Length: 185
Length: 295
Image (cartoon, rainbow over all chains, first blue to last red; front, top):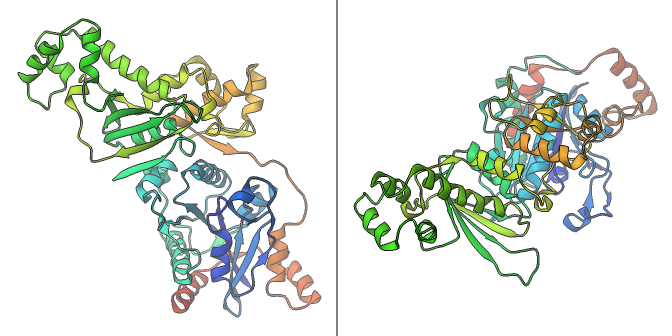
């Protein structure tokens, strides 16, 4: 079985679990537990381990989706997920500027460990106080052409929107010259 | 196009970095109040051109610069108005007065520095809101004709900042490292502490360990690292909090997903060990076709 592993990461409430639930053909293996700290005020359940979803493409090909932990993003679990991934999507809640510095940390964490294709998915863009993509690029430090990462707008509960984000990721993959055969680390 | 948020959510220091790096122009309005609900709200205005600070004032009527000149007894309001009227209305007031010989370069520097000090005080406010109006015109009556990059303004302010309470959440965490992201030596002027911390910017040593090695409080190192981050010299790199030799949960789920029995799982484990996973062009092509057909 040939498996494409995609990590879906981002801050609490950015839509990681919804993203995987929307596209997965199986019921998402969801290890959500009731949050007990201040995170609970933002999101009733938050991912303390990780989410898992699957999409079978053909009898011998599949895509696996892994949602990173919402609270402890930088523990060994997240580290393992990232090192096993072929590509990842970073979801950013566009109307929560207080999360942008955490998103920046996640990006740096990822960049230090792996050089794999990435797209940034902007969620909650329909909120009136959502920041524009240009301003989010600046806030995340992605203005530099050497750090420029494709941005897509994502509705994590809409199948077409999630599909388009994944297609953008694959497009980024082929454009960024990761080659026809990618070897796992 | 406006950019708005609360200072609790996005600090003024980070906003200045955005303005500088984005070469933004316009008027930034800031409403701040002392950290008590009963305190009065102050409104401040800062103007930018292409990422550079050109003026700052706490007056909405455009008379802030004039009032400062009058306070210093350098010129009367009547003289200022008359001399400014002789110049094009687009020429900054300070520059116009200098061209008329009414003010000296040192006086303009003092006036501009006074405006910068006004900005530096704002860095201490934790409570408030801001709104950057990118379409607002620049007020010539508040401008000295001098300007400085927004980044330099905020770095200067942070080097002398006594109360870092407003920036507590923005500082890199003590268990993070910093990584140099620019080639070669920094091109901007750093102070001694910043140089010391920059020497550790290899992404491997936590800030708290740097503090121990430099025999400094961790907060001092965090603050220096934050200034380096604002200057675009380093990025904060979270360090993994613990390592584990446990079997990878990814491996477990990869096996579980397509398996139907225990023997399948065991066979799968063997084959996974023997064969490193690869992604072929056909998988990517098939996936794109699959996603398009199902969406």
